[in-house]
Length: 189
Image (cartoon, rainbow, N blue to C red; front, side):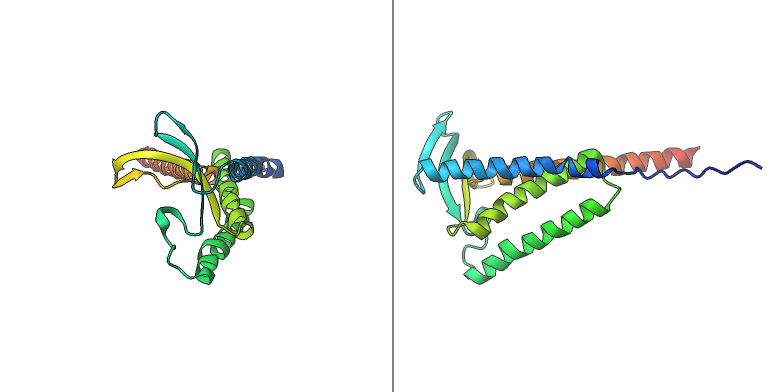
């Protein structure tokens, strides 16, 4: 009798392949906090430190207690702490739990998730340890698009979350399309 070999199609993930992408989290957190430190040290609050390409890009020093588009600026301090500090911390913890338990993420998806984690940690650090709020410093002209003459000021952490979030969503869409076409091919056979 022949032995039946069962093949597990789920990719086994080594601990190293789960921990290596966390280096991106650390890099984003470090660069974010370093740039914020430099801005706080060398640029007066609510002033322009440098401008590039005319007034297209400016490095300024602002600290905000709310989030993008001034959402939450009218909230009480305790509500802001819960909505913009405690809840995001809980979400990051849940993301880390799913990240370490799941064997379904591709290597690329693991790196993008860790980029989001690094950016989230950068802003959470500010929310918990900077009394004036999150330091933002990148100010870009937006030419009236969506009614904004200038895009809301942002930082390296915000860039990490946004860029890696977009890349993660694109990777999910590509995976869904690929899986759908594979099912169609199998069905057509």
